[in-house]
Amino acid sequence: MPSPFPGMDPYLEAHWGDVHTSLVTYARDQLQAKLPDDLVARAEEYLAVEVEDEEKPRSYYPDIRVSQEPGIGPAAEQSGAPPAGIAVADPVIVPLTDDPPTLHSLRIYDRGRRVITAIEMLSPANKIGLAGRKAYRRKQRDLIEGGVSLVEIDLCRDGDYVLYPPEWRLPADCRGPYRISVVRAGQTDQAEVYRASLRSPLPTIRVPLRQSDADVALDLQSLLAQCYENGRYARSIDYRLEPVPPLQDEDRTWANGLLTEKKLR
Image (cartoon, rainbow, N blue to C red; front, side, top):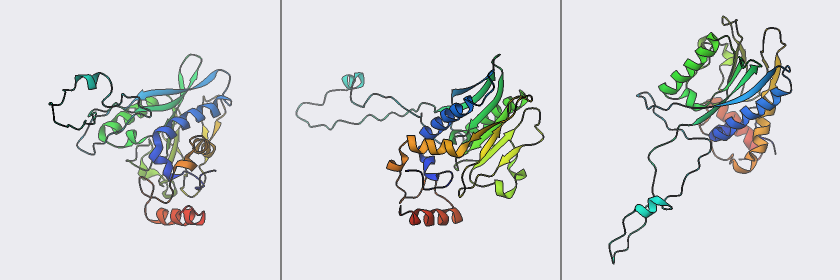
């Protein structure tokens, strides 16, 4: 069963760890067959730097965490025995530290391992909190100054605007909840932005390579459909509830009508 939404499904944002990883992987696979023989797409992994700041401290978690169950293993053996004759409940051990989230991006390399194009699938860790935004801005600046074409795909409504082109320069119909920008190497005086409305399918965008190469197409809607199907989200999402974060104003009214029409509410 496909998603009831024609484009981005806002309910997927609550499962962004899985969706983000899948989008990067599926985008790599889609591009790989279209690239010239001497270029290759690779998924890159890095850890977000998490520092609480005065603006909006938030916690994020790795996409997959493997941990020992509380009360099992060495921690349990070190616990003191209860006094004789007194029934004492076993406490649940709650860890108070978090590992930094693992983020993924996509790079297109030539045979000399030179980065040609960077594709960033943004996550809340890039957009919420001063430290996360600063770290992303530094990477963004390094890529642009290094002569790399930068493709930014922002399908997360939570957090601040961080794309390379200033938000005030975007046309009104490109300032929706989802945003896509392409800055070509050597053409940093302009950006290509794509309309990405909640109510329409996501676009197929042009991914730049070297100046001597033709652009390659990246079909974002098909990637999202693959994420939805392979993640079995039709079985796990309860569309009777509001998405997280909630939709605003006209989008909320429209989504309620759509879900009611499809008998999901």
